Length: 449
Image 1 (cartoon, rainbow, N blue to C red):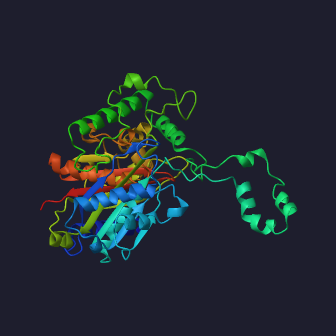
Image 2: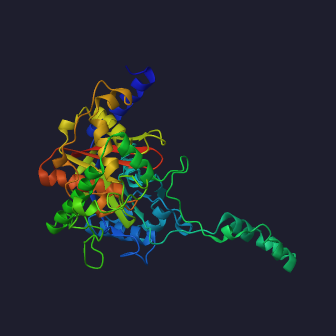
Image 3: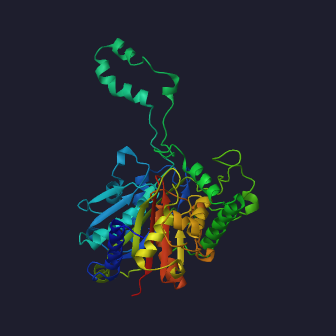
């Protein structure tokens, strides 16, 4: 039984979903287009570019694909990134101006780990619903080829103190060296470990897979499937409609078309050694990339001669215990958005779930199909049910395409939308986990002109 406060929140979410679906055309938010540059393994295709350069490519590419939209007609830009370069701390603003979006168009950056672009898009939807905007560009970018590496704290403190110490002459400068050890000479790279738990996501996901009984064999099979699906999708040209060519190609270099469970089984554990189940092959790799989406009010899109493709029927951001449930956000988020939309898993035609790790995806699927988990952890009367594998990530996923942290969310929604139209489906379900125990889920409905 729900408490009165929980019941109130549930009714408020149902009302928001209803408003999004039935809002007058002047304020109904619609997804018009989404695109990305090819995702690439770090230190390869984009090794000489900054994240802001990648963002510029995606934003400019999106505008080029939609010449009906003049940049001056954009009301707001929301853009996500995770590992921030101090010179472009508001990377949304810098990338937007670099892509020839006028300087009088405001922009702000969102950093919410792996769901930064998800939050950017939903923030745009909410701005339109609130009547604060009619045209929003949202997305995100990330590079692991140009990380902001810092001096150690000991060195930083002394560099900050240097101007004052130098006024005292050589002895003042020499005094700064007091207390420095060899360990202070080592640089600091951005931490992949969670700040609160001190645990890297791969270690947490490995434990999660053990908790739900997901075997190494199952994970390797899922990872191989992702690569094979992605390779087939590229071969069949299914990604050409959503990838902006770079140097004349839409190919993505992280895909290994010859992947098989047998080949992946040869790799050693990467996180929990020596008996863990997570390896470099069944975990997403460090990637560079950028994405962008055009979200508008229905009326504005029609006025400009643009055809809406889909809309967010319901969406939710959830938070779970980062120590035990760090990557289970998708299961909790999916339960919420299905309830809000008045749907069940059986109503969903297309599933696009972020593949941080094969074990993470399979654990979330197992959680949703568990009476025990859904009753004890979600407070439900029974399980959500099974996700049909033939509907899940059929064009590959983050394990094969790559996972530029700030950009993946837009890829998920764009691919889900295109699949709905290509496959004749009505509803798609998008979900992603994020560091810190945060998760996102959304029900996307196909828009029919």
